[in-house]
Image (cartoon, rainbow, N blue to C red):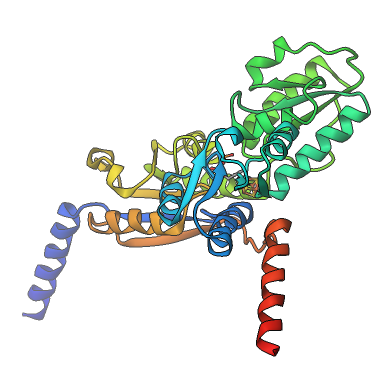
Length: 346
Ligand code: 0CM
Ligand code: SF4
């Protein structure tokens, strides 16, 4: 009797296995989302609104994320394309992507108070550009044409800098002295594609000098490493990020390059197309450096409702870097704290 029951149980289990859908799981990349430069820039706008009151003007999207921009707009931030749009006497915040010196001059002429939320790692590249221009190098700036960061960096030394937009652009480069050339880059590029561009440049200029340290920032690199680790195992990779976010777009490319069958960029869970899940058992999830975690949680909930409840974290690196707030803001916050302490002591 017991043997028969055992046989029935085994047979039932076998049937179950034959008809069961493949196990569904999510690989969740770490690190993902906010980097130190984005965190600092977003907090700078929030603190400025608290400190000075609305409206506070921001030149360009503070970071390239729709949700962040909408949320700050609701709190009283006004985003403008150009400094000239800011009424005289107001405060303008410069975005994390950096601005050319000419923009600082425009703000001065417009009698605007400025808060510079440029990421310190972008400022580092600006300083490299200034230094190599002073030493009279031809600077080959690897980056994407029209991107805000590239416009800002190029503006530091327009007569010395030329843009190289990927390996296919290398043939167009012309320099004054092939032995006095250095390459720099945008901070949010694909590491592998940039190395391809550098190799092609070295083919043309064997004495090409490299930047003193990595221009592609730690956050961009870590997010790409994590997505590479999950890419080979994932049938589908969902990257949360906005279309104008260079580092987010790169994550889709890196996922596909690492072997993911399919990869998409979405701002919100609602943009995910049900058809993407056909035949999919493993979904990779990550987010760009300008993406708040709440949006990733929205995607995880959406997936859980469709049977993807099992979440495994794929950790490529630990991040602990933080940046202090822009100096203009720290100064005003300190002054206010001192005044409050003085008043309390009276
Ligand atoms: O440069 P990118 O388009 O990736 O900008 P982002 O705002 O999405 O990410 C943060 C930064 C910088 C600089
Ligand atoms: Fe700075 Fe890198 Fe973040 Fe850009 S992605 S804000 S360079 S840390």
